[in-house]
Length: 389
Ligand code: PMP
Image 1: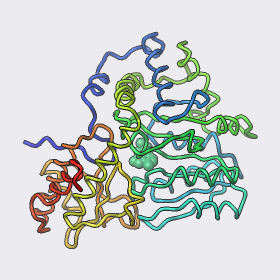
Image 2: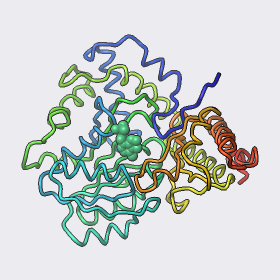
Image 3: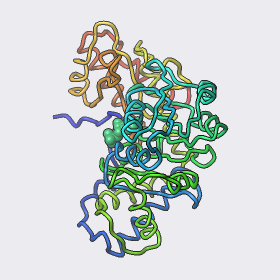
């Protein structure tokens, strides 16, 4: 009998109070009690992303890809020049969405595992009049963490708006939307936000709203159009009933529980906890002699780890690790898909979950024929957790 931990880079393990909230009887979307919950969740999004009341929150029923689609559909018009900072599979998805809405896209592409620096972006911004820069804060296909503060500053200096995909970063990696000059930051519920899949969360700056208001053409997506949603979000924040499309009531009730927990801990502590767990996992992986996809620790994410398979081991090891108690994910970046696997450690994941996952990984690797000394990874991970390495 196994009780495996879900340690993929989303969805992740969720807290019991969040799951229990999902099971409450479904309220009317215009029930005063639900209106208050939704209104609170919207306001709390500003506290999560560190921005003031001039920023506009949106919570929509849909996955992270809907959040991407919504940001782009409202801000990109035919002929707009977009610079996509490309650190992997999800950056390229943003590029594809920008093209779909008529954007003229240039990619500034890093090799898998590398990142793009603010000075590279500043140089490229000299080459054409870009109206928009997109950044993938953590590209889940490579485990690469990109310098959002530095690149946003470069974009601002060139007069471009900044959209950041924070799906694998929000409420995990350090992020200060207003201080860093990010115009639209978005995420989805199923990662560090700590709620089952199904919600797209976005926060838009006054400048992003200004760009949307100044559009020459209608938004091509009916469901994503801010013109439909802004009055709805304003109504919920003002505790008034409103309807455009039915909100995901149970998910929003659960979201409120999870956000409350995150804000009670405090964002600085949340960032520090993810740094510690991320460093602890990486120390354990390194102790077993495995390389990692990010080419330098300074740009490795803290929300997931992307270990390379050791010689003689392939994706077949994931079944052994699962049998040993941890569900991990295979590779995703097409250029290196069969060379690495992925461990998610964000949101409700605890230090003990991380230790159990490293233990399962050690046993799985031994089953696959890789002679790792038992306990080596655990000692290294525990060393980081107790602050001795
Ligand atoms: N961006 C990033 C960085 C992601 O990790 C993901 C999901 N793994 C997405 C976007 C897309 O989100 P979803 O699968 O919820 O549509």
